[in-house]
Length: 277
Length: 258
Image (cartoon, rainbow over all chains, first blue to last red):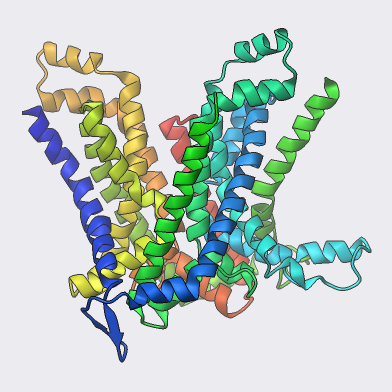
């Protein structure tokens, strides 16, 4: 009786997932084997879109994954330092710092990217400041439209997604265990790596996975911030759907990116699991 | 020891500056008389806001965003709360895979979710893109947040009081309305606000599925791509303050900590 009623309670949420996600993803996969003739989509069974993905976009995919990995590693490292400080060093200001992190979480995706464009641009704040200080004679154009700028911007809006799960994990680490480690002669560094980190492993991996997936799949940041040297695969996927009207190509590239991302996460999971506690 | 602690202070201060600083700059310059972000920012002015309010395209985008965000808040609160009730009672071996499935949209790149929806609606179903598609796409992404928030609240007050009400003769509906609902209502309102904030902030799904017209996010995008229009700072500030304001309110209501 209750089981049947609970099934009805779940039905609306599941219906939305099925109609708006699962069915679309299946159709997208099917379409990656279709072909395009004179801008018209034709049902077909061909690997040409996939071939195009591997031949034309193989290198860019690897580069996109690399940007994702670098961003995720940096976010996890910085986020861990911040979360650790908030948990064990901030005292009564801890709650306020977590609150500050959380309120930046749900808003301002485009605004954040725009802000970095203004800071790093040729007549942006950073160039102005560096010229005022006499460090630069002329504006440095490489601040914007570079890989570094893309990574900084991605880090800016993804960092809260690292801090919150890491802070949640660190709340389960008791101060008493840290004191015990210290009393038994461990240095702070040893305590961190051998007592704190092993207890936070699930949180560390979750933070890495989430940030990696979102960073590798982003296309707005490289489009606005990356210029030509900072391009990522997502931009070209978006292009196939917005102006080039080659849906099979875009579909194959989407699933190529997703599968490659999952391979990276699987490798990361193996590494995390193999490391002794 | 003292030196080590001040090093941690520097770490916290730098992280905070990195997260909040750029946003403060945008808000600050939206009140500056100069056209671009840069110092000196010129005198204090509200003229960019005045120009925005006078702009019909902006008012249309604001109206559409309001419709979309409030529909998303209502719908995802209904689907998410119902699901949270079922999942909170279900055995973990059933609840866990269902929860993972429903949360999947949060893990996938929004770009891939957006184009998959476009493909299904346009090619699979032969329908037109438009606001209903945007709204359902946003519900897909926001309902997992509602489920998590409401489930956490349900777990924290337990079943004892509901059982007591039932033992004292309340019908199932009375027990829900008089015992459960008052205890979870703040969490539900919080979840609705988070959903509205996410919807308002989303650019990627909206830009692919809206067909014609603009939400506030796609309106900002248009300005970003074409000109360095100084009213960008003002509209960015409006967008930022409304999403952050809703989050603050939501976190207070949901009493969410970490």
